[in-house]
Length: 355
Image (cartoon, rainbow, N blue to C red):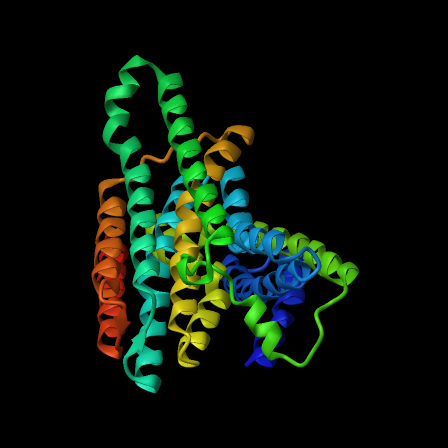
């Protein structure tokens, strides 16, 4: 599987050639998407190996901070190009994708192979609480924004900045808790890198190799993101798809495909606690860290972005958090619950496609 995934890096030179020849934007979108998937895995591997040289606490912080690096790079490039609505849609899509699509596949396939799987009720409760905080933080700018705007644009920006800071504080507190609490009290948000490397007979990369691969993968990801974002508008004209659908469905799947595969893999190994940590932890990271960070980055690049999502996006986020919380309340999962999560994701995807 890994060999096939890394083999997809062959699309990287294909994108370079297509860009130099000013090729068909649709071809560039497809090939850059296929190249980003394995590159995100390489970036994740470099982060995990680097964590071995920094100790468990700093390593956990690195994994938490760079867990969505691929998607963050794509959205920063999109922001610079002025595709603010695509960026906001990708935030929504990443959150609901991790909660419904990734967790759904993990529970479905893990349940089919292992039967009923158990996980910590404390983990489920804490995850639900953190995601509720995230939804509140993302809903407030949309609800209060129209009332604040009457005092001028500066007030709207200030309100969004204040909400963004509060969300980052919540994210920081969750990291502190996960790094300091006893093992049975952690939130299940740890990344799977340590277990993967422990199970492997291969030693971790050297510090120099880890840093070099991390640097090169970030540079390559930035280039591919430029190509991907540059082909979005021509793709919309040719396909008839909306910015909302591309941002909510396509970009999150492209940026998180490697991480999605890891969650399913560990669930099939009967490690549902870890699978929930990967999927729910990624959603929390996007909502509490990536989204607020993009607010401040948007000000730096001169393309101000607020956290005021539209009612359709907020409804999708609310529904996703509610059903995921209900399914995890008993500390057990089975294949039917996974299928239900996937059906909810499919229903929402149909809705976004026709909006």
